Length: 109
Image (cartoon, rainbow, N blue to C red; front, top):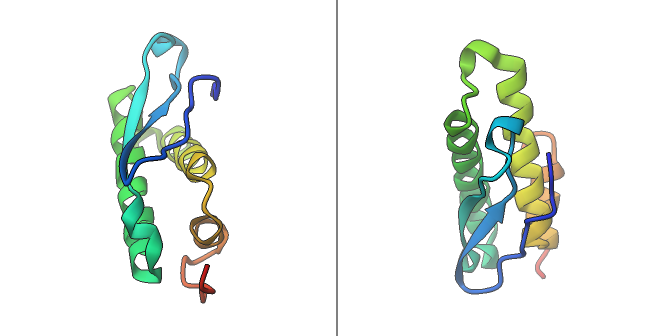
């Protein structure tokens, strides 16, 4: 997966562009909506992560992956979600994302 077209989200409600996910879609860009206000609380971070996960699923479905190809679909979704979290670059969201069950105690930032 290419990361060259990624741009960090800066505005309060921003859009995170994601590079193409497959050779067949090499010229396409995909975008994820990011409500940065959700980064202000632990519950908001959990909500944002769930929303990013949902958007990652939709992106992978749009490039032709589906649940019949469970391994490829899961890999695509995890790659998209990893890139989104990396580009948002918020320590508490990253900690939440990296926790095994998403249920960690987040310190105040």
